[in-house]
Amino acid sequence: MPRFDAREIDRWDQDVASLAGSLVHEVKNPLSTLNISAQLLLEEAGEPKSPKEQRAVRRLQVMREEIARIEQIVSSFLQYVRLQTIEGRPIDVNALIARLLSDNSEAHERGKIRVHFKAAEDLPKISADEVLLRQAFLNLIRNAEHAMPDGGELIVRTVLAAGDEVAGETREPHVEIEVIDTGVGIPPEQLTQVFRPYVSSKREGTGLGLPTVLRIVRLHGGGIQVESEPGQGSRFVVELPIESSGSDEQ
Ligand SMILES: Nc1ncnc2c1ncn2[C@@H]1O[C@H](COP(=O)(O)OP(=O)(O)OP(=O)(O)O)[C@@H](O)[C@H]1O
Ligand SMILES: [Mg+2]
Image (cartoon, helix red, strand yellow):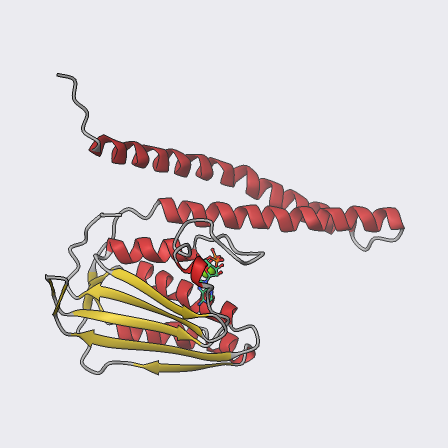
């Protein structure tokens, strides 16, 4: 009897992802040629004198900005679809977050964002991909910054969560990382949408920040939750197993 195993569909999805990745990769080269050409034209134009020249230079500047925007969209898409596996090594999450916050401290000072880092003392190292984990926390921190255009509090907290039983399922001890802000918050009807690709409320946003975080966290065998109150702020909680299976689950 004819038979079809729906697991095939996952494979098609992966084919589409790798095809899309190749397409985007191909698009990047002509894009950077366009960018350089626009830059050279601007340099050759020098200081525009007549209104006609000024209009031409303005149009060239618009072209460059739009090219830069396409480059950004294309790069974040490429980064997103390429996230398929991780290389787990023992990582000190507290040290990673401390570095990330210190690297961004000037921007936080400028943005009047007060940062509080509450690091758990007893945190064991976890098996993780440092580059990807850094990217995930950076995305969360950037979102918190954007949510506080007039300043506010950014609280990052790490916790060693004991193993527990949730809905009859036993969970191993794991590490929790909370990223809390006192920003604009997320309307309840958007809360279920924020992890979907290309959902963004920002003019310059690609809407791939949180989907990328979700993918990275899942690749580590973890999960993420969000709570938010409009006008009060948001709280993202990342849960990571101490021993990652290095799964390529998506
Ligand atoms: N901490 C936060 N406070 C308020 N809203 C948030 C927060 N984090 C995410 N959001 C909402 O979720 C949307 C999706 O976030 P996501 O990081 O995926 O994309 P983005 O920030 O818009 O763009 P980018 O791809 O540049 O990160 C945001 O546009 C914003 O509306
Ligand atoms: Mg973002």
